[in-house]
Amino acid sequence: MVMTMTDNFPLIFQDVYKQYPGVQALEEVSFSIPTGQIVGLVGPNGSGKSTLMKLAAGLLRPSRGEVRVLGRTPGRWTKARVAFMPEVDHLYPWMTVGQTIDFVSTFFPDWESDRARELLDLLELPAHRPVGKLSKGQRARVRLLLTFARSATLVLLDEPLSGIDPPSRTRVVNGILSGFRPESQSVIVSTHEIFETESLFDRVIVLSGGRVSLDAEMDQLRAGYGRSLRGVLEEVLP
Amino acid sequence: MAGYMRLLRKEWRQVLPAIGLLVGAGSLAMLLLLGAASRLPSGLTLMLQLFVLGLAPVWALWQGYNSFRHEWSGNQSYLLLSLPVPGWWLITTKLLVIWAGVVLYGMVAGMGVLYALQRIALQEQLGLPPADVMGIAALTVHSVGRAIVYGLLACMAGAVIAQWMWLSGR
Image (cartoon, rainbow over all chains, first blue to last red; front, side):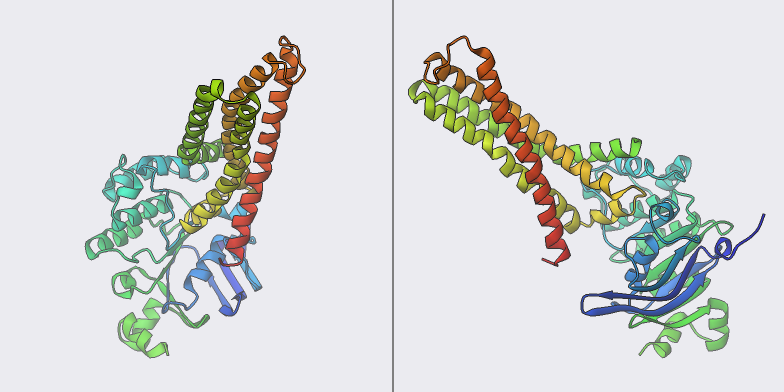
């Protein structure tokens, strides 16, 4: 069997620009993510993290440059293989947790029902409660379940800890760790909550003003700078 | 097509309260008119029933707009757009359910129109013989059919308006 570049790198950004009316969200962004890594995408608010995630998820198209997901331009085919957890609360409040799982599972051939049941227990979620009656932390955990109950090749988590209380944050981080399959998956976690997530990352990409200002393995980073990611960011970010 | 049916069920469940309200209000209006029919001129009863029927496209326009607008503002668009399904599935399931509401409402309001036409025919105000059942049925079907067709066009227009407002950032 011939191995191609895209087999090893499920996500490739090549000189990508994204412009909204009056705003340059991303500029000259290039990187590739290999299988088996958990990559932290960090940067301040408005640095382009969510735009980058949406481009990878196929919700947006680049203004210039090329995004390749599993060797293809993002679209219907890649959506079936990419699990995207957006920053916003995108669930239907009138559906119960069980109905939400049932609804989403219909569309994804890589859905694993046993895994979903395991995660339901692990993340301590009430299957019969309507999503609208859950706490913010519980809703974030439902979104995490929907993401990790699939054997997707590429997992995109946009601000998974945003607005979640500290005890729930630990559960979410544990959920990410227990859901990750390094032999077949890559995970990108976009966040500005570095303290809780730093231990997850194999590599970090720092975005600032829509540009990549740092892209390094965590080991190299710690050895080179000899301090925590927070300390490195303070030095790197303007 | 399991995915399509699933989306259709989701839309149906979501729009069901609005359809229930519409059909309930339509039934109530029809019953009130039927109750007052003996005190009103037949022509006026028919006009009022046609007015009730004519509200179907207005509701469809509002519901078409609201259905799409609600999904964008509630962030559920992220869920729908990340599903590996063709875009036309997302649009047609919404329109189909709203249109089903229009058809249901049209049938209820149509019964009122049928009754009013029958009264007029009985009084021979249309010059129809009282037994011209086919003529009355054809007029009713024509009125209801128009309401249903206009309803479909109206919900499509509502969807386009919602989309345009979203794209233009309003």
